[in-house]
Length: 158
Image 1 (tube, rainbow, N blue to C red):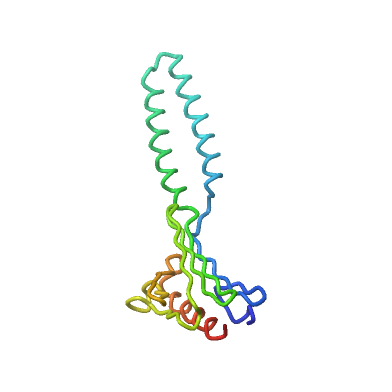
Image 2 (image 1 turned 30 degrees about the horizontal axis):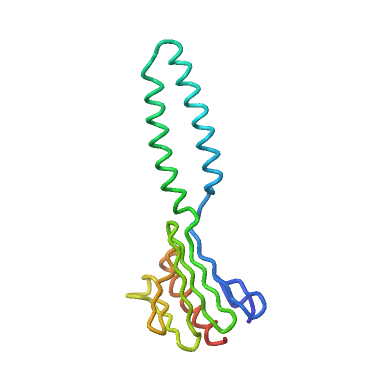
């Protein structure tokens, strides 16, 4: 199998891998450092106002930082979401991670079906041996049909 044939996959030897991830510009560790610096600056300013007699600035700074912290936690929880599809060793392995929840399914390549769930722009359903997994959340809807064709092509040549 040649890598030039695939648009979404990476080919290494006899295995083909698809890594479909969220477009994340800030990693959770970068977000943690940003939040820590924001806390230092905001609480420093609040402490200066507290010492100068403006007693309500510091409690509101804590309230603000709590709200921002909750928002950052919700963001960071989904920042590493993704889908890994691998065709290797005579198996199609699908791994999904969403908000810390991990799901893994293995299929035999000759017994798996790959098709859009409802229409060409819907998620791709990978099914076989009584199991079903939906993939393609991190691919634009208009490209999901191309991804499904690519997976089918790799399965045929496996």
